[in-house]
Length: 256
Image (cartoon, rainbow, N blue to C red; front, top):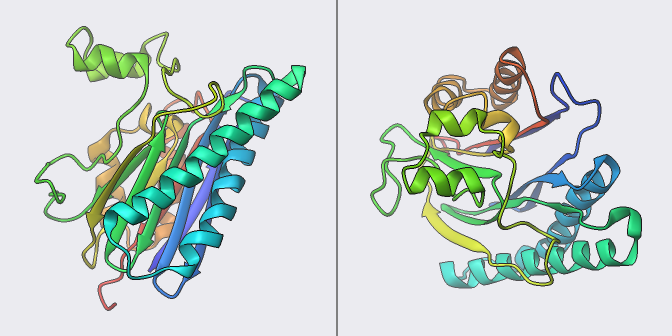
């Protein structure tokens, strides 16, 4: 397994409210997290870091002890970690007036052997890329998460196109996020992994500038995960870099 993470403030913003975490939990376990904070510069930065760290610590404690569990049990562990992160961010925002209203996205990928388990809140995305382009449920799309955003809803009901969503003035408005309410709905799913597959997590600073097919081309053609991450961030910045950009790339080795 190869893995690499990268975060960049972009070309416009001076502070980076994104946060990512990438660790190896066990011999065949990898944990990747991407968060995109909101609620003012310092508050958003704090929310993303706290959410990622709370989720990471709980999963290190719980998932790191396990191996032979079914998909639903792994997903339950992820939901528990996300719930803990939401509670912590919400409580801190209520306790400190300067952080009132802070929140963050939170997307987690937990790889256990040949299984990929995903949890997400917000619009940071998880992708699975392979040569066939087919996931467990037969979908041709490589995007594993749903965007919990206003523009995604408008796209779903046909009011705007995906191209219009990229530049929509309300593209950053979320209807679901970590820390803004005492409880939150959490999306989870699991997928099978094959040698050569690439798992990618990213904040909207990437996909608002780089199309899915371009992301797929880079990560499938570039065998070095560090170079792939560098190329993706560089391309987003070349196209304006209007937001912070975070990318985590994990490649399943063919010889494993």
